[in-house]
Figure 1 (cartoon, rainbow, N blue to C red):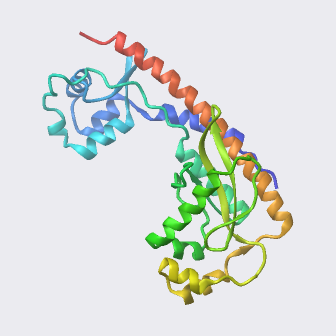
Figure 2 (cartoon, rainbow, N blue to C red):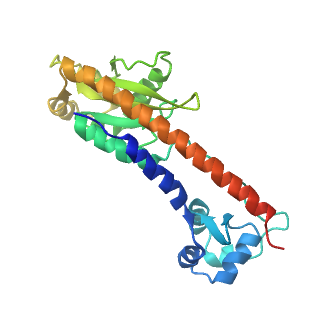
Figure 3 (cartoon, rainbow, N blue to C red):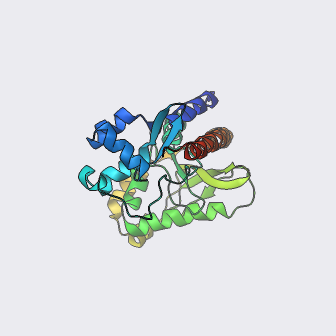
Length: 272
């Protein structure tokens, strides 16, 4: 099985541009006329960049405005010290919508659960192809905390070679670090599998995390068992996907840098 993932990175550059809305799209979202939109831009209550002769507006700023204030409230006068233009774009290390799409495909192909986390173990994506055994555990606060502690422990490992480890629940998992510009950015974790049918202490686990032991036993029978060949192949594939994410992150950073430059030029060219 071959994983041809690198071409997908191109869609993430397009997604970065698609984060910018036209004036008409902003009008439709906020239910305002064109004059009001430009007044809000001039007063600093909308974030915009000028591309040629056209203004483009940051989707996140418009969505925040929708969530935090009504259009009527947003159109009132801004405070005297409000900036006329918002700060330059904030870089995002990984475009998570692209990461999630690739992760979902990878999980389906390998038949294991896959998640991308920050280096502190906090999930950045939703779990792909998660098993019921782990879903029961992660349904409780104690279970989620234990899983994240297991993921966080992976970040302390100094080598970049994927190696199989055992989580707090007794299942196996493997991870690959994701670095952008030489800095640790995230971790790609593939897990929720077993290497054989050796019984686990589900009674103790159920007691520790607060779930029904009978349900946990039943769910354990459905957990995927990977043979030695598949485990070795999983590590190879995992690194390839992690490297793809690193490339996406670098291209995303380049795109953000270019948009920042456009934003800076727009400030210099601001209307009176």
